[in-house]
Length: 308
Image (cartoon, rainbow, N blue to C red):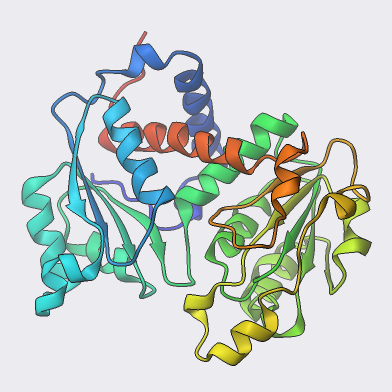
């Protein structure tokens, strides 16, 4: 049976724990994994621009000994000629062993998975889901804090369009004693389904606030996000909201000594570069963890066994 990853909840908590354990082993013994995917091919089908996610997938497959192919934008694929996602997926299935797809339309990877004869990984679909970023975030939090339970996590910035935020909240509510603080302007609050179905529906304690300064002292993790220009329908709204929250060294003085700052990147100016030198800045560590977790995911979906 072909297994796909379209949503963070496609894997049980036990399966995610196993995936994170495999990621840890890859980090400790990279040489043992250098040839486990020899002869396997990963297709990266990216219908919208990406640096980190696409290169992270490619780095992951190359480190496993496999090879890569694909396209970097819709304009460089047959989508420019009008080919459907379903047809492209059927074709890619003839060339590759596994596919990672990013698409601006919600549900496109789901369409691909229904016709593909190889595993499909959702590498981000519109403002909907970004499950491999969620796995990256879970591995990062577990590695830096030593646990995924009993945490207070603050999400700050664009909580309306931020697919990384939506995915991580859905994943974190499955762990005990998790508390959520949502920090955003009124116009960029989380969608109602996150508030009602995910948070209230799972009896998760949460607050919605406007002030980052007030929230900082309470947090174990601060998850910053950029205000995404590409999700706005008009320039005026973007300009008005883009500088709503900027994390500075001065603000970091309000935070706990062991709070970690995460960010899915790219950042614009929501984290001042001076914060990079703070020992609690975890966002570049997050990038490295993303390679390990994607290596583990590729192995898992391809049914490749852990080396001795």
